[in-house]
Image 1 (spheres, helix red, strand yellow):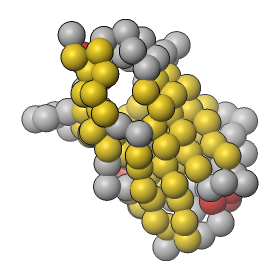
Image 2 (cartoon, helix red, strand yellow):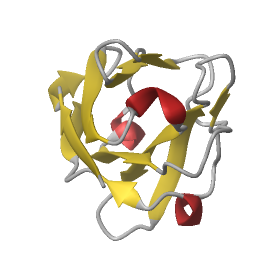
Image 3 (cartoon, helix red, strand yellow):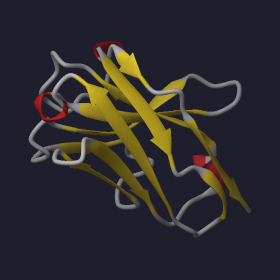
Image 4 (cartoon, one colour):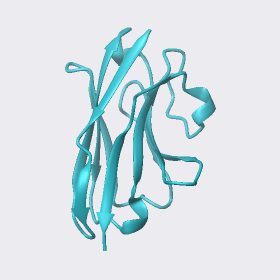
Length: 125
């Protein structure tokens, strides 16, 4: 079992920054890939970013590339998403996801079995 708890969401003006964190517990954190997804009201859950179990490989959605950075601290069992140059269209609930059988960064939500409860990010114009 893996438990994931996100934090760091909030209200920010367009152009601002936020840093989301995801605290993981349960199975050995360093052994599996993780990702961030987001869901805006009335829309499907979309991929944002993912990182391999080693942290050496990352992938990003085109919409956030160059603005968001994903990182992990395996010693602290923490996944982070640094978001800069935020836009109103980044407004969504952000979820972290993990799967102990996954080692490579993946864009597919279907490959992740464990999800956090989500944290709201609201970007005002």
